[in-house]
Length: 419
Image 1 (cartoon, rainbow, N blue to C red):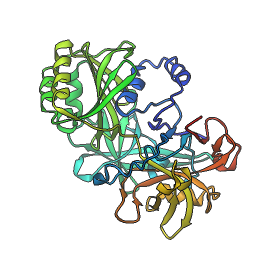
Image 2 (image 1 turned 120 degrees about the vertical axis):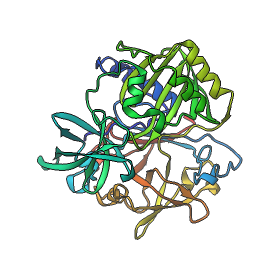
Image 3 (image 1 turned 45 degrees about the horizontal axis):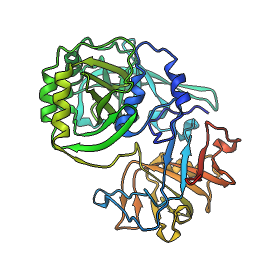
Image 4 (image 1 turned 60 degrees about the vertical axis):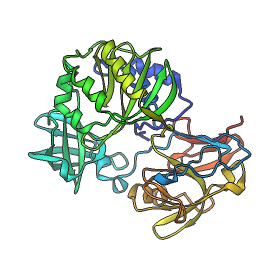
């Protein structure tokens, strides 16, 4: 199966895989990118998708946390670790429009999907139509198509555009973008000051996160950055190494960005992966110091956010548009178990029960979601988009894709965190 690259490895990074990725020598991409992502979100792109859900044995009930924001924390409740690979290549009839057409061509230039929808209020002028060809690996069938293209308001269409994929507007990024000559060039091309909020950040010392924070405001940050328009971009290979820096987490609808990063090092560099490629600008130690001081002196401590939250448990009911999942058997104290009502209004979630068709009552499942958990109403989970089966074995549990024998790159493993 063809695994999808997603930023959801939360821990236990395979550094051999990182080293292998860095040796590929893609000239327009920077190896620091992977470390920056780990710093801001505690996630790391390592070539294959993976995720982890960790629990620390405790004797007391930690209770739900951050319920005001609709989030339920499982930290400390689970005695098992859940990690591994769940991405797969779906047959054509089960794919979403974004999955069917990941690449398109406009005026001779190639653009790739950012897997992100964009509202019509952010659309600009019409740019004509693009051509795209979807492909079903199961039937070896190609599906050519044409789609309407619009500019994104305030964004250079040579950088990003919006494509109408069967009624849904999706952000596409131009492939092979050259690195901007200066920071100001990049600011103007993407209207960064207008769109980007720089408030949630982490502090990093070498390869270790030392804290997660929320700044009171990013006004001072943008004031300094506005003075750095002439900061030159770097075209050399670049590594964060053991530097100290802060790393902002950026989610931005207009650019199709979800939890990318913008980092500022103490020795005067700004680094970002907002455009997938690793952009590096030399803003100088004075500017970097002022940025770091402005946010670290006026912030409050917060918690690390996973790339996507998730729950795990045993499937106890399959209803009309929902499933019930009980995590009691995964908990250090079974009495602390919770029954979740997971809504299946996203076709990416409901298809997991239809194909390959082997998820049944009593199975252990792992669910990723992008919405919330309503703790006041049956612990209802919204935004579920992935449901994977985990089968317990002596040393853990594995998830074969399509019933095939599992391998290290295509399994979800559940093992005791005490081992």
